[in-house]
Picture 1 (spheres, rainbow, N blue to C red):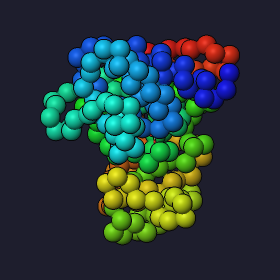
Picture 2 (cartoon, rainbow, N blue to C red):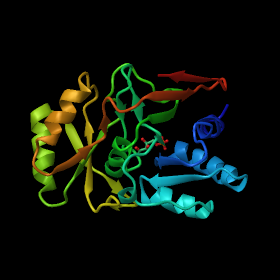
Picture 3 (cartoon, rainbow, N blue to C red):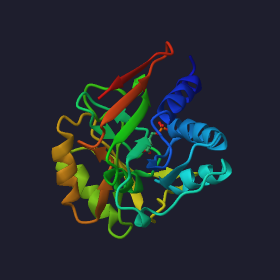
Picture 4 (spheres, rainbow, N blue to C red):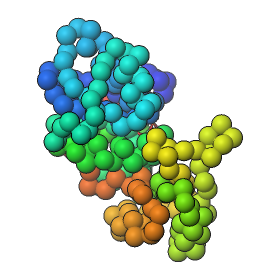
Length: 225
Ligand code: DER
């Protein structure tokens, strides 16, 4: 099965968790893209739900698929959120933010009673860190944060660029991709990074995922609760 076929299968499988009249959070990225397409089809067939999005990109896809969405400010809690991830470790801790939406994703997903993560098998790792950790920083003084992270952990970091320009997130921040290589204690690192002046959010989602759904290259799907 190709990458796209695996992601399509994951999207269809995940769509089954969305029942009528649910308040849901919808993630960002190429795997969630297939969920959004499937939800567009099911909405045509009568499925009714209210969505809160985790990025402008996801909002645009919903519009294209004829679905609407509301602001997070109009709800207290979401029943369910579904998103992708860049890495998942054995404890269900995640690295997210490869798609640049980590801040709004973490806020929306913290408001959900359940978080389901859909990934292809390559994302499952023993220990996080091979994927560079996205850290969202205020644009003012970003180089101070860069230097502080690099000296504190003796690692390299890189200001994210897109199409040859410095990448600005939906919330007008920068992202530093941090090459830790290995993150044995994601919770501790998340807390330590948050103490640095100028850090807005990290791509470490610790103790947030309730269910990990993995698509395998042989077409099978496994679920970890
Ligand atoms: O940026 C994000 O957090 C995305 O959810 C990312 O982690 C997964 O994106 P993908 O499904 O395109 O690999």
